[in-house]
Length: 94
Picture 1 (tube, rainbow, N blue to C red):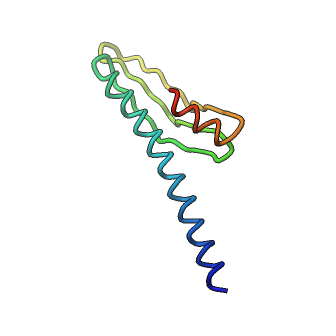
Picture 2 (picture 1 turned 90 degrees about the horizontal axis):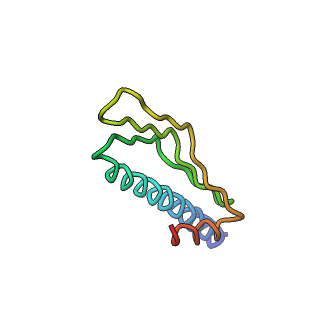
């Protein structure tokens, strides 16, 4: 009885770790883009999320140029693929 329970707990920890690693990768990529845009403006975002069904989302993007008061706000940017493996392959090509 204990072995299946330990296996289930280990599986949940592995899935959770994978999820948070992917979200961290998305956030890191957006932060890199933000640093690249820093000479012309400020890019902020409200975090990322990831779906095991092949969707990656970046929430609440806001770009404010240094030389103006206008800003560009986007509620959500999503990339949808046919599945998790296709999304992971896309990550390696971008």
